[in-house]
Image (tube, rainbow, N blue to C red):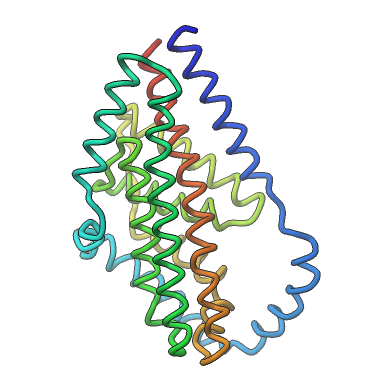
Length: 268
């Protein structure tokens, strides 16, 4: 099988996974049983707390992107991930086969699993202590670490504002509901194409950070409120690894798709 045929076949597979992710619907049983409870909790949450949470997420993203990325990088071996990518990418260019493509996927999957465990520990411990809002920068740090490691596994750096915006839209796409999820997916594909073809795209990072923090805040409002209550807080802590799993899964799909597109384009 020719190189371009192998790549196109892999691209078709990842696009099927993408569509499956985009079309997933909320479990009807969970919606029926838990939505009334969640709605009841939400009516008890003061408007001031909701506003405070919006600001906390926004400040958390600012902290990580503007000052904390260097500290996030100290929690994983960036040089090792870069080196493993270079070796696998060279092998793919020279001896295109599924083995080396799987090696890249293996590295990204391993990163996601490790960060789910870190998030579970962090969320559970803080939940037991009755802490909700103060853990937000830590939680955002784990989210960014997860995406950074996956990005590096596919050869993508994340220092520019455009790549940071791509990461933020990844979070939005993973956490948004159905129609909005598909809109974010289109934004991601357009932004990726503009970045990878040097189309000279520009983004206003502060605006994208605000958009992402508002969406994430609204999604996690109840969970973070519950996590702020002693004893019940452990329940809120359980939410964190579920969120990491969802964001990590979507990030692996999008970066793999982006990588395969670049390889297909190089063959043309």
